[in-house]
Length: 559
Ligand code: GLN
Image (cartoon, rainbow, N blue to C red; front, side, top):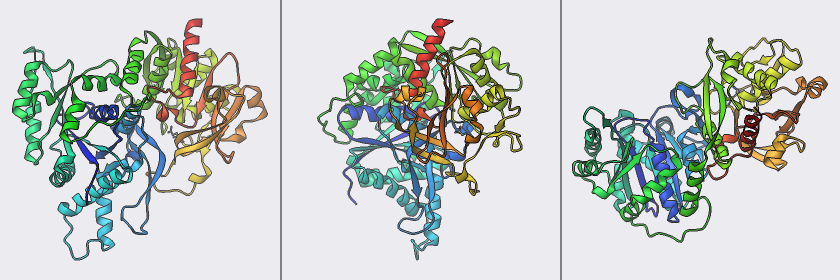
């Protein structure tokens, strides 16, 4: 086949967790500044079909896409399919920085590739052949990549490979990249992202880990064209020279990626170091006419970053939850809060409250200007989360509950105002006397795990006289969902309504409550079954997060 699209492969070295996803998105951004149509594929070399069943403590947040994809492992067959809408959290980073929506098929896992290989063999797709990693598995990988670039008519497809070079499980993907480079030499650029540590003892940045990781890459037949060095401060001139010499990369293609206060500044730093032009030269791209819009225009982006840096007041948001062992478990929520804050001139000071048996939740919440109750699954920390909702009601602290957080807000309301002692979700307490949150009808017959929740973007009908409507100013909106349980309408009795509970939105059928709130003028308390954070962008905050932060500022001033 021939391909018009160009491919920019991003690999990582030294260690994981150094922000390869951010780098990938920011490379896309400098290409967008030049008018190119770009998109991103993320390769996750683990054997799960998708990250939906992974523990957030282990893997961070799952990002939810607009569409739910019916993944068919066997091309052109009537074999069964698997629903995928839960994908790697890096897609949140890509979407926020690039302002584009990506289809779930852009997250390729080893699980999907091997499932395709083995089921295709059983369907006779390789009849007569010994099925091997090369060329059969690599062909399936390449087919997935080419399908995306052709179907979406992209100028450049960025492909980030998860993990670090040298991992056994990612080597087959690197082999596929090598083959693409061999077939289309003028179409590929290889970017290697490494860590350049600072040795306090010697008072110097050290290039050795980068040298080793480049050697490893070269032993797989891949020569990086560009090296991006992650470090606390910009790379010193002599360290750039050293990395260049040992890695066989021109000095101007050794790029600094230092710690930044505002992550959205990175594309500007890349631009200042000439990264965009270097890539265009490598893959022979002539800049296009750039449209003037807030997402892809360079000067608009610079203006936006300035706004983030100039936010000089701050509000403190308490975030009671249970997945705080790593910082990324609620990353889209953190970002959505930051977006809303920046547009209101505020930095958001997040107080993450990891609820354990010893946590005194009311004490912890006392110095907060707002409470965000987090999404989640399972019993641990639930009583503390319900107490947090009750604390908000008692003290009129602005409150936003997301998904699980909205369900637990309702449980707290039922306990506090309706006297329903022990009210709970059946997910937590299957024999609760008051199952105020229960399994969705559509979930009752499902026994498979993975892609089986109510997922993806759904239409929401908003009640006009509500805080939710005030935020969105529309009676029909679309947001993304990921849940099995929902708030039961039969508990929203006359008494509940008298005590101030309002159903502020439902699904299209009217059967599923999509959000609740307190119908009071002196207290902003909203719970959404949906996840508005997935659609919040740095230049366009989510309306409901925006109103939440606005209320937190007001609350702070009143104190
Ligand atoms: N565990 C709850 C449910 O399945 C909430 C899920 C979530 O917070 N995403 O409905």
